[in-house]
Length: 74
Image 1 (cartoon, rainbow, N blue to C red):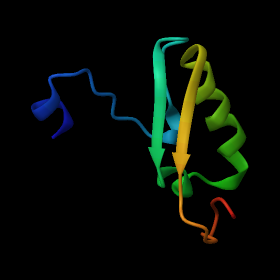
Image 2: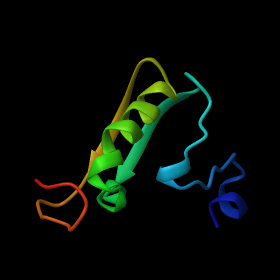
Image 3: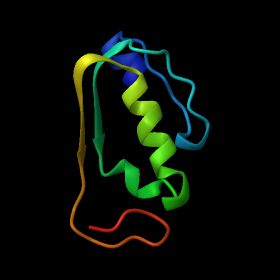
């Protein structure tokens, strides 16, 4: 739907197999999606997300304050 409605490039990937270009994006917005990343690979995923950002850019991650099995705790 994002491709059809936005006309923008859309990447559909698994957090466990990211293939992101280096320093290409101005921002990353994750709305409660990192809950689904297993805790043991979360640091690697966050490093990959950081590497795809241009210098001085930001990532935003929103999530409710809950505990999810195998995911983040807050």
